[in-house]
Amino acid sequence: MGEDHFERDFECPCKNGTMTASWSEHDTWPSPNRSLAWTFECSDCEKAYRFYDDSIIRREDAEQLETLRVNADKAKQAVREAAAQHQARWVDYILRLPTKVAQNRALRDGSYGTFLKNASRPGYVQRQAEVHFWSSPKDCLDALGIKDDAVDKLHAEAKAADKAHWGFRSAMKKIGLPFR
Image (tube, rainbow, N blue to C red; front, side, top):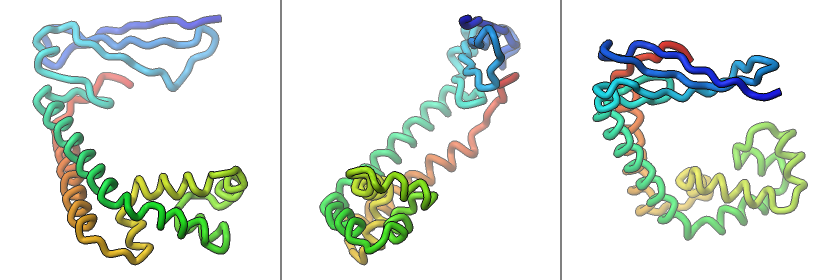
């Protein structure tokens, strides 16, 4: 038993060359979850395009998208850093809630059954509180009733940067790949 490796060529976007899809499959049973690796065999397309998710985008769009993503990530990190002084208070608040139901609701941790099962593990609730604070510091401060103008300002900037990133991503022209 092992893996078989496959390749298949397709016409590239400029129609003057090819692009290649490569993947591996188990030799006994097929996998619907194959992971394709795409490469351009056409030097013109390699200079002009990038593979992105299940599509092809222009190189300039890929660079702009990466810049917007980095800007959004930096803006979110600035919010986290500004709010960090309040994290201990958030964790303490979660740990002092009277029931696991209340903790699960405050953390928006999904299934209560799963939360209850995991909450018995030492440190789990504290780690979940820290993760929730890291991912949504403004929501945590709002839940605590803390008004921090610096966090509010940075949060508004992070939302704008995130909106710019996702707006550009949604609007950019994509060329669909031949198969997935």
